[in-house]
Image (cartoon, rainbow, N blue to C red; front, side, top):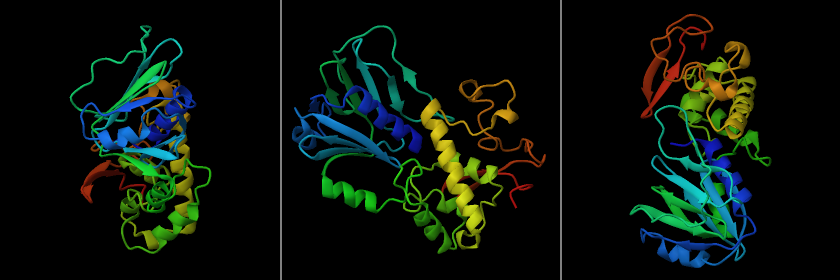
Length: 293
């Protein structure tokens, strides 16, 4: 599933290429027809992300709300005035990859796929959404209700980390499970979870309420740092430059991108112990038993 940084990149792309423009909105698949009609012909004012939810605001005070889930993805295209990635989302075997637009420009979208849930078309470009878990039209109050059920997003300037600290401090669930709970902290997925716990030397099985204030703050700050890299680079890069000498962020993926994620059976780069993998709450958790104690 795309992690939070991908949704922030989607919001940025919508702001870059659609904000201020009127768009036609349709649902070739037919499953979003009523919601599309409420947005059709209106101007996009702004887009923003909260965790794994994308919100696209329109001038009639309605919002397109999308959660990509495991299979969702946006495809984009346009003429010479339209720039940016041509695909964001969709499942990835490891990390993430975005496909960027070629030199062939066209404002006319291709024939829609049978699975195209929503299509947005402006004068200079288009966006197609396929396979989302959520695609709906919301009012401002409904957006507030959705966001009120989500934990703070480290990438949002108004995020209150104390809400995460409080959620962790009152539960006996392992901190490795708390980090995946979107009601406790938004946007952190399986890779960021494993890598931030490793980087902060926190035992993933330690109950949230037993984590120190310093540990919780370190996890919040490190996830914000890693998510910011993801927004900037478009990939999940969690290794520091000194641990991959001569390899840039852009060139790190996939071989030098992560410390423990999908490296079970290999030696920990920090202490030499064997990295492990275990199923926890239906997700694969990667950690080092030698230095995460």
